[in-house]
Figure 1: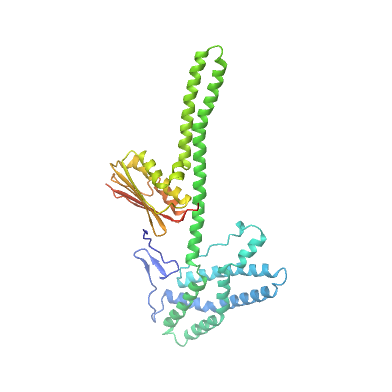
Figure 2: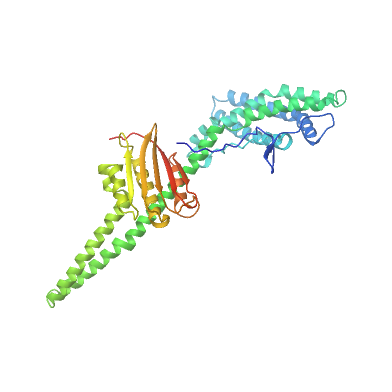
Length: 402
Protein backbone atom coordinates (compact mmCIF):
# COMPACT_ATOMS: atom_id res chain seq x y z
CA UNK A 1 0.00 0.00 0.00
CA UNK A 2 1.30 3.46 -0.80
CA UNK A 3 -0.06 6.79 0.36
CA UNK A 4 -0.54 9.43 -2.25
CA UNK A 5 1.60 12.45 -1.56
CA UNK A 6 1.26 15.39 -3.87
CA UNK A 7 4.64 16.59 -4.98
CA UNK A 8 5.32 20.25 -5.23
CA UNK A 9 7.37 21.65 -8.07
CA UNK A 10 10.53 22.54 -6.18
CA UNK A 11 12.65 23.88 -8.98
CA UNK A 12 10.08 25.97 -10.65
CA UNK A 13 8.14 24.29 -13.43
CA UNK A 14 6.17 27.50 -13.11
CA UNK A 15 7.88 30.72 -12.32
CA UNK A 16 5.54 32.63 -10.00
CA UNK A 17 2.89 31.87 -7.42
CA UNK A 18 -0.45 33.42 -6.75
CA UNK A 19 -2.87 32.90 -3.90
CA UNK A 20 -5.82 32.00 -6.07
CA UNK A 21 -4.82 28.84 -7.89
CA UNK A 22 -1.33 28.26 -6.53
CA UNK A 23 0.76 28.64 -9.71
CA UNK A 24 0.71 30.54 -12.98
CA UNK A 25 3.20 31.07 -15.75
CA UNK A 26 4.83 34.27 -16.89
CA UNK A 27 2.69 36.37 -19.22
CA UNK A 28 3.48 35.93 -22.91
CA UNK A 29 5.99 38.40 -24.39
CA UNK A 30 4.59 41.30 -26.43
CA UNK A 31 6.01 44.45 -27.98
CA UNK A 32 4.69 46.61 -25.12
CA UNK A 33 7.36 46.00 -22.48
CA UNK A 34 6.05 44.96 -19.06
CA UNK A 35 7.81 44.46 -15.73
CA UNK A 36 8.74 40.84 -16.50
CA UNK A 37 10.38 41.83 -19.79
CA UNK A 38 12.41 44.60 -18.17
CA UNK A 39 13.60 42.22 -15.46
CA UNK A 40 14.72 39.76 -18.12
CA UNK A 41 16.52 42.54 -20.00
CA UNK A 42 18.34 43.60 -16.83
CA UNK A 43 19.29 39.98 -16.13
CA UNK A 44 20.71 39.48 -19.63
CA UNK A 45 22.66 42.76 -19.53
CA UNK A 46 24.18 41.72 -16.19
CA UNK A 47 25.25 38.42 -17.71
CA UNK A 48 28.47 39.91 -19.11
CA UNK A 49 30.04 41.23 -15.87
CA UNK A 50 28.72 38.30 -13.84
CA UNK A 51 29.90 35.60 -16.24
CA UNK A 52 33.23 37.36 -16.76
CA UNK A 53 33.90 37.38 -13.03
CA UNK A 54 32.72 33.76 -12.67
CA UNK A 55 34.90 32.62 -15.60
CA UNK A 56 38.00 34.33 -14.19
CA UNK A 57 37.31 32.85 -10.74
CA UNK A 58 36.75 29.32 -12.05
CA UNK A 59 39.73 29.25 -14.40
CA UNK A 60 42.09 30.87 -11.90
CA UNK A 61 41.15 28.66 -8.98
CA UNK A 62 41.15 25.45 -10.99
CA UNK A 63 44.46 26.18 -12.70
CA UNK A 64 46.25 27.42 -9.58
CA UNK A 65 44.76 24.77 -7.30
CA UNK A 66 45.42 22.03 -9.84
CA UNK A 67 49.01 23.15 -10.41
CA UNK A 68 49.68 23.24 -6.66
CA UNK A 69 48.14 19.86 -5.85
CA UNK A 70 51.64 18.41 -5.56
CA UNK A 71 52.37 20.85 -2.75
CA UNK A 72 50.91 21.09 0.72
CA UNK A 73 48.67 24.07 -0.12
CA UNK A 74 47.19 22.75 -3.38
CA UNK A 75 44.30 20.67 -2.05
CA UNK A 76 43.31 23.18 0.68
CA UNK A 77 43.28 25.95 -1.94
CA UNK A 78 41.09 23.84 -4.22
CA UNK A 79 38.74 23.09 -1.31
CA UNK A 80 38.47 26.80 -0.51
CA UNK A 81 37.73 27.55 -4.17
CA UNK A 82 34.84 25.05 -4.07
CA UNK A 83 33.47 26.67 -0.93
CA UNK A 84 33.74 30.04 -2.65
CA UNK A 85 31.97 28.62 -5.70
CA UNK A 86 29.07 27.67 -3.43
CA UNK A 87 28.70 31.35 -2.51
CA UNK A 88 28.82 32.40 -6.16
CA UNK A 89 26.10 29.85 -6.87
CA UNK A 90 24.01 31.31 -4.06
CA UNK A 91 24.32 34.79 -5.59
CA UNK A 92 23.35 33.45 -9.02
CA UNK A 93 20.30 31.67 -7.61
CA UNK A 94 19.28 34.91 -5.90
CA UNK A 95 19.72 36.89 -9.14
CA UNK A 96 17.69 34.33 -11.09
CA UNK A 97 14.98 34.29 -8.41
CA UNK A 98 14.64 38.08 -8.29
CA UNK A 99 14.82 38.80 -12.03
CA UNK A 100 13.68 35.58 -13.74
CA UNK A 101 11.32 34.17 -11.13
CA UNK A 102 13.17 30.84 -11.04
CA UNK A 103 12.32 29.07 -7.79
CA UNK A 104 15.44 27.00 -7.07
CA UNK A 105 15.96 25.76 -3.52
CA UNK A 106 19.27 26.23 -1.79
CA UNK A 107 21.41 23.09 -1.41
CA UNK A 108 22.06 21.68 2.02
CA UNK A 109 25.07 23.37 3.71
CA UNK A 110 28.12 21.21 4.19
CA UNK A 111 28.22 19.93 7.81
CA UNK A 112 31.86 20.89 8.26
CA UNK A 113 31.48 21.58 11.99
CA UNK A 114 30.34 17.99 12.59
CA UNK A 115 32.72 16.19 10.25
CA UNK A 116 35.63 15.53 12.59
CA UNK A 117 39.19 16.66 11.98
CA UNK A 118 40.78 18.81 9.27
CA UNK A 119 41.35 15.88 6.92
CA UNK A 120 37.67 14.88 6.97
CA UNK A 121 36.61 18.49 6.40
CA UNK A 122 39.04 18.86 3.53
CA UNK A 123 37.77 15.66 1.89
CA UNK A 124 34.13 16.71 2.33
CA UNK A 125 34.81 20.05 0.64
CA UNK A 126 36.77 18.45 -2.21
CA UNK A 127 34.01 15.98 -3.07
CA UNK A 128 31.18 18.57 -2.83
CA UNK A 129 29.08 18.13 -6.01
CA UNK A 130 27.40 21.54 -5.56
CA UNK A 131 30.75 23.35 -5.68
CA UNK A 132 31.94 21.43 -8.74
CA UNK A 133 28.71 22.05 -10.65
CA UNK A 134 28.92 25.76 -9.81
CA UNK A 135 32.48 25.92 -11.14
CA UNK A 136 31.30 24.20 -14.32
CA UNK A 137 28.45 26.72 -14.60
CA UNK A 138 30.89 29.64 -14.25
CA UNK A 139 33.43 28.15 -16.66
CA UNK A 140 31.08 27.55 -19.61
CA UNK A 141 28.91 30.67 -19.49
CA UNK A 142 31.30 33.37 -20.70
CA UNK A 143 30.45 33.00 -24.42
CA UNK A 144 26.75 32.99 -23.56
CA UNK A 145 27.14 36.09 -21.38
CA UNK A 146 28.90 37.98 -24.19
CA UNK A 147 26.26 36.90 -26.72
CA UNK A 148 23.26 37.87 -24.57
CA UNK A 149 24.78 41.22 -23.57
CA UNK A 150 25.59 42.20 -27.16
CA UNK A 151 22.27 40.96 -28.51
CA UNK A 152 20.14 42.81 -25.95
CA UNK A 153 22.18 45.99 -26.10
CA UNK A 154 22.01 46.09 -29.91
CA UNK A 155 18.33 45.16 -30.02
CA UNK A 156 17.40 48.00 -27.67
CA UNK A 157 18.25 50.39 -30.52
CA UNK A 158 17.73 48.29 -33.66
CA UNK A 159 15.29 45.45 -33.00
CA UNK A 160 13.23 46.87 -30.13
CA UNK A 161 9.82 45.65 -31.51
CA UNK A 162 10.95 42.01 -31.31
CA UNK A 163 13.23 42.39 -28.30
CA UNK A 164 10.65 41.00 -25.82
CA UNK A 165 10.51 37.75 -27.80
CA UNK A 166 14.29 37.52 -28.09
CA UNK A 167 14.61 38.32 -24.41
CA UNK A 168 12.14 35.62 -23.39
CA UNK A 169 13.92 33.01 -25.52
CA UNK A 170 17.36 33.84 -24.12
CA UNK A 171 16.03 34.13 -20.56
CA UNK A 172 14.51 30.65 -20.89
CA UNK A 173 17.96 29.31 -21.78
CA UNK A 174 19.30 30.95 -18.61
CA UNK A 175 16.46 29.46 -16.62
CA UNK A 176 17.36 26.01 -17.94
CA UNK A 177 21.04 26.51 -17.05
CA UNK A 178 20.21 27.64 -13.52
CA UNK A 179 17.86 24.73 -12.94
CA UNK A 180 20.22 22.21 -14.51
CA UNK A 181 23.49 23.23 -12.85
CA UNK A 182 22.66 25.31 -9.78
CA UNK A 183 19.67 23.44 -8.38
CA UNK A 184 20.34 20.74 -5.79
CA UNK A 185 19.84 17.10 -6.65
CA UNK A 186 16.18 16.78 -5.65
CA UNK A 187 16.31 13.12 -4.69
CA UNK A 188 19.62 13.40 -2.86
CA UNK A 189 18.62 16.56 -1.00
CA UNK A 190 15.25 15.08 -0.09
CA UNK A 191 16.90 11.94 1.22
CA UNK A 192 19.45 13.92 3.24
CA UNK A 193 16.70 16.01 4.80
CA UNK A 194 14.69 12.88 5.61
CA UNK A 195 17.68 11.17 7.22
CA UNK A 196 18.50 14.24 9.31
CA UNK A 197 14.90 14.46 10.49
CA UNK A 198 14.69 10.71 11.13
CA UNK A 199 17.90 10.77 13.13
CA UNK A 200 16.46 13.44 15.39
CA UNK A 201 13.25 11.46 15.84
CA UNK A 202 15.16 8.29 16.72
CA UNK A 203 17.31 10.14 19.26
CA UNK A 204 14.29 11.85 20.84
CA UNK A 205 12.35 8.58 20.96
CA UNK A 206 15.24 6.73 22.59
CA UNK A 207 15.66 9.51 25.17
CA UNK A 208 11.92 9.47 25.95
CA UNK A 209 11.98 5.68 26.37
CA UNK A 210 14.95 5.90 28.72
CA UNK A 211 13.18 8.56 30.80
CA UNK A 212 10.04 6.40 30.93
CA UNK A 213 12.00 3.33 32.07
CA UNK A 214 13.86 5.39 34.68
CA UNK A 215 10.58 6.87 35.97
CA UNK A 216 8.86 3.48 36.12
CA UNK A 217 11.78 1.96 38.01
CA UNK A 218 12.03 4.89 40.43
CA UNK A 219 8.31 5.17 41.16
CA UNK A 220 7.47 1.47 41.04
CA UNK A 221 9.84 -1.40 41.68
CA UNK A 222 12.54 0.70 43.33
CA UNK A 223 10.12 2.21 45.85
CA UNK A 224 8.71 -1.21 46.67
CA UNK A 225 12.18 -2.68 47.17
CA UNK A 226 13.09 0.18 49.52
CA UNK A 227 9.96 -0.49 51.57
CA UNK A 228 10.78 -4.19 51.51
CA UNK A 229 14.28 -3.58 52.87
CA UNK A 230 12.91 -1.35 55.66
CA UNK A 231 10.21 -3.90 56.54
CA UNK A 232 12.68 -6.76 56.71
CA UNK A 233 14.98 -4.65 58.90
CA UNK A 234 12.16 -3.99 61.37
CA UNK A 235 11.16 -7.67 61.29
CA UNK A 236 14.73 -8.66 62.10
CA UNK A 237 14.70 -6.37 65.17
CA UNK A 238 11.41 -7.83 66.45
CA UNK A 239 12.23 -11.45 65.62
CA UNK A 240 13.30 -12.38 69.20
CA UNK A 241 11.09 -10.10 71.32
CA UNK A 242 7.85 -10.35 69.29
CA UNK A 243 7.91 -13.35 66.87
CA UNK A 244 4.24 -12.96 65.88
CA UNK A 245 4.66 -9.35 64.79
CA UNK A 246 7.89 -10.26 62.97
CA UNK A 247 6.10 -13.08 61.13
CA UNK A 248 3.33 -10.68 60.05
CA UNK A 249 5.93 -8.20 58.81
CA UNK A 250 7.73 -10.94 56.86
CA UNK A 251 4.41 -11.95 55.31
CA UNK A 252 3.78 -8.34 54.27
CA UNK A 253 7.29 -8.15 52.82
CA UNK A 254 6.59 -11.31 50.84
CA UNK A 255 3.58 -9.59 49.27
CA UNK A 256 5.73 -6.58 48.42
CA UNK A 257 8.22 -8.90 46.68
CA UNK A 258 5.45 -10.36 44.52
CA UNK A 259 4.22 -6.90 43.54
CA UNK A 260 7.75 -5.73 42.75
CA UNK A 261 8.35 -8.81 40.59
CA UNK A 262 5.09 -8.17 38.72
CA UNK A 263 6.05 -4.54 38.09
CA UNK A 264 9.46 -5.63 36.81
CA UNK A 265 7.79 -8.15 34.48
CA UNK A 266 5.47 -5.42 33.15
CA UNK A 267 8.43 -3.11 32.66
CA UNK A 268 10.39 -5.81 30.83
CA UNK A 269 7.35 -6.50 28.65
CA UNK A 270 7.24 -2.79 27.79
CA UNK A 271 10.90 -2.87 26.75
CA UNK A 272 10.75 -6.09 24.77
CA UNK A 273 8.33 -8.89 25.65
CA UNK A 274 9.81 -12.36 26.02
CA UNK A 275 6.96 -13.92 24.04
CA UNK A 276 7.91 -11.80 21.03
CA UNK A 277 11.51 -12.98 21.17
CA UNK A 278 10.59 -16.62 21.69
CA UNK A 279 7.49 -17.12 19.54
CA UNK A 280 7.20 -14.18 17.15
CA UNK A 281 4.51 -11.69 16.20
CA UNK A 282 1.55 -14.07 16.09
CA UNK A 283 1.84 -15.15 19.71
CA UNK A 284 2.91 -11.70 20.93
CA UNK A 285 -0.01 -9.91 19.27
CA UNK A 286 -2.43 -12.54 20.55
CA UNK A 287 -1.07 -11.90 24.04
CA UNK A 288 -1.37 -8.13 23.85
CA UNK A 289 -4.86 -8.33 22.30
CA UNK A 290 -6.05 -10.45 25.23
CA UNK A 291 -5.44 -7.44 27.51
CA UNK A 292 -7.57 -5.14 25.33
CA UNK A 293 -11.02 -4.27 26.72
CA UNK A 294 -12.53 -4.94 23.27
CA UNK A 295 -12.68 -8.41 21.66
CA UNK A 296 -9.90 -8.48 19.05
CA UNK A 297 -9.44 -10.90 16.15
CA UNK A 298 -5.76 -11.31 15.26
CA UNK A 299 -4.63 -12.64 11.87
CA UNK A 300 -0.91 -12.92 11.12
CA UNK A 301 0.08 -14.30 7.72
CA UNK A 302 3.85 -14.14 7.41
CA UNK A 303 6.05 -16.62 5.53
CA UNK A 304 8.89 -16.03 7.98
CA UNK A 305 9.84 -13.78 10.87
CA UNK A 306 11.15 -10.31 9.93
CA UNK A 307 14.23 -8.71 11.43
CA UNK A 308 14.06 -8.26 15.20
CA UNK A 309 13.96 -4.43 14.96
CA UNK A 310 11.08 -4.47 12.46
CA UNK A 311 9.25 -7.11 14.52
CA UNK A 312 9.60 -4.97 17.64
CA UNK A 313 8.30 -1.83 15.93
CA UNK A 314 5.33 -3.77 14.54
CA UNK A 315 4.52 -5.16 17.99
CA UNK A 316 4.65 -1.80 19.78
CA UNK A 317 2.65 -0.14 17.00
CA UNK A 318 -0.20 -2.64 17.39
CA UNK A 319 0.10 -2.50 21.18
CA UNK A 320 -0.35 1.28 21.27
CA UNK A 321 -3.19 1.18 18.75
CA UNK A 322 -5.01 -1.40 20.89
CA UNK A 323 -4.50 0.80 23.95
CA UNK A 324 -6.09 3.69 22.05
CA UNK A 325 -9.02 1.44 21.15
CA UNK A 326 -9.46 0.49 24.82
CA UNK A 327 -9.32 4.09 26.03
CA UNK A 328 -10.98 6.17 23.33
CA UNK A 329 -12.85 4.23 20.66
CA UNK A 330 -15.98 2.97 22.48
CA UNK A 331 -15.80 0.07 20.01
CA UNK A 332 -17.51 -3.33 20.31
CA UNK A 333 -15.06 -5.31 18.16
CA UNK A 334 -11.63 -4.84 16.63
CA UNK A 335 -9.29 -6.73 14.33
CA UNK A 336 -5.57 -6.85 13.62
CA UNK A 337 -4.22 -8.12 10.30
CA UNK A 338 -0.50 -8.52 9.56
CA UNK A 339 0.88 -9.73 6.25
CA UNK A 340 3.78 -9.31 3.84
CA UNK A 341 3.48 -7.73 0.40
CA UNK A 342 6.69 -7.79 -1.65
CA UNK A 343 9.31 -6.03 0.45
CA UNK A 344 6.86 -4.43 2.90
CA UNK A 345 5.33 -5.60 6.17
CA UNK A 346 1.74 -4.36 6.36
CA UNK A 347 -0.35 -3.90 9.48
CA UNK A 348 -4.02 -2.99 9.53
CA UNK A 349 -5.96 -2.35 12.74
CA UNK A 350 -9.74 -1.83 12.51
CA UNK A 351 -12.41 -1.02 15.06
CA UNK A 352 -16.12 -0.21 14.87
CA UNK A 353 -15.92 2.65 17.38
CA UNK A 354 -16.93 6.29 17.20
CA UNK A 355 -14.08 7.32 14.88
CA UNK A 356 -12.62 10.80 14.77
CA UNK A 357 -9.02 9.71 15.33
CA UNK A 358 -6.46 12.19 13.98
CA UNK A 359 -2.70 12.38 13.78
CA UNK A 360 -2.68 15.61 15.79
CA UNK A 361 -5.31 14.94 18.46
CA UNK A 362 -2.88 13.97 21.21
CA UNK A 363 -3.73 10.26 21.19
CA UNK A 364 -0.21 9.13 20.36
CA UNK A 365 -0.95 8.70 16.65
CA UNK A 366 1.55 11.39 15.67
CA UNK A 367 4.31 9.73 17.67
CA UNK A 368 3.59 6.43 15.93
CA UNK A 369 3.72 8.10 12.53
CA UNK A 370 7.10 9.68 13.38
CA UNK A 371 8.54 6.39 14.65
CA UNK A 372 7.49 4.54 11.51
CA UNK A 373 8.75 7.37 9.30
CA UNK A 374 12.16 7.10 10.97
CA UNK A 375 12.58 3.61 9.50
CA UNK A 376 11.11 4.41 6.05
CA UNK A 377 7.67 3.29 7.15
CA UNK A 378 4.23 4.71 6.46
CA UNK A 379 1.30 5.42 8.77
CA UNK A 380 -2.19 6.20 7.45
CA UNK A 381 -5.31 6.89 9.54
CA UNK A 382 -8.81 6.67 8.04
CA UNK A 383 -11.25 7.56 10.81
CA UNK A 384 -14.38 9.50 9.81
CA UNK A 385 -16.61 10.78 12.58
CA UNK A 386 -18.95 7.98 13.55
CA UNK A 387 -16.44 5.30 12.54
CA UNK A 388 -15.18 2.87 11.64
CA UNK A 389 -11.48 3.53 12.16
CA UNK A 390 -8.90 1.85 9.93
CA UNK A 391 -5.21 2.41 10.68
CA UNK A 392 -2.72 1.06 8.15
CA UNK A 393 1.01 0.89 8.84
CA UNK A 394 3.79 -0.17 6.51
CA UNK A 395 7.31 -1.17 7.45
CA UNK A 396 10.20 -2.19 5.23
CA UNK A 397 10.69 -5.95 5.27
CA UNK A 398 14.15 -7.14 6.27
CA UNK A 399 14.95 -10.81 6.63
CA UNK A 400 15.84 -12.04 10.06
CA UNK A 401 19.50 -12.79 10.69
CA UNK A 402 19.62 -15.81 13.01
